[in-house]
Length: 494
Image 1 (cartoon, rainbow, N blue to C red):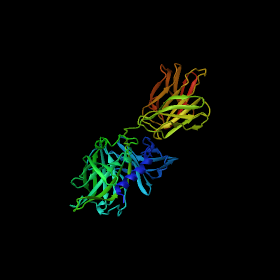
Image 2: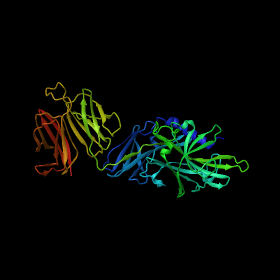
Image 3: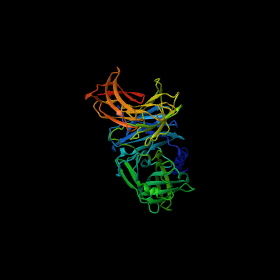
Image 4: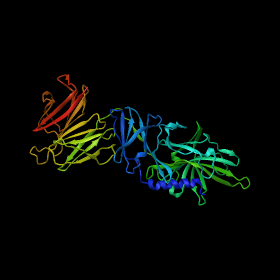
């Protein structure tokens, strides 16, 4: 019978044939904090694994908690994560699936805030559970694993194991020893029958002692152990904790490049018994159990924002068939609201060309015709909706304004009494007026009257006219310059 270590490595190798180049969590994006106190976390799932995907979050280094998650739309998943401004939030995803009648877990590696040993169990992430009473070539209760966890910092890797007896003895007798291993493999080199392991064991002369090892399988299925570093180990509250330096792995010349091609490692824990024949002094190996293998993606997803900053859309470009612009958000939030309204009240949905919101993202939409003006609405929290009004002027228009934009941007809704900035762009040197009207068309006052020396103008305003605060309601901002008029609807709330 093949040893369990061979079987485990073959299982991992088979899984990785499909895992190389596959990250089941594509286009992972987040919104800002919404009215219900949650961030919206979304990701694309072209593999169809999303039904089994969990979302976990940890605010300010607290234990990991599971968030509500599910299908949002075709091939897109969504999770709701509670958030308070100022928190240092970490979040990650975990997916469990069955492969060749064995369980396999994809997940983001749980990151800890500090290198403390042993770590709090709740700050690690569960890879999987294992049924009690199973074995491979030898059954001993101490070797029967029931659960495994993993975690990391920028410099260390952490593992934790549970078994049937809640104890991890290494010495049974002078001729029998127990060994507990957490194997760590680089997907780029695992098919070479090469793996690494954090080992918890007795000091077996000329064979093994606690430490970090390089493991190779011989043609006979017997593993060879080459010690390359130290490990920290402790049994506490019935769990075995192990830790090693990440650099001890990555500095080994056989480990391969790090980060590797998929920015992931594979972890699985194995138990063994080593027996010594008292007559021949030869060693024999028995495999007790193995844990659920985990493919761990090393992506530290972190969100820490003191307050929300409204997004900005700029660099407007259009022709007779397309409208395009850049969306930029200081916190990297994606827009929950993104729509373009035409003069006939037709609503179009601009689509992103990428999902990396840490930088400006190009949005575009096909136009059914070239309108005289459009209203662009967008929001990263579905509360504060920004409205930009753009007059689209072609190159042959008699006004002869550059074919770019005449636009107004202001937060919407406005909170009465709070200072805001009304940003105008695409201006000329003609006389400019900015006035406020109510829904009945009554002029309430003037915010600006004169000439603008620049193409851009910022007007500070606090929602008052003639020193009196406007009541909650709907109003219009009318901007007039050089024969052009733009009306922008906005709401004031108290």
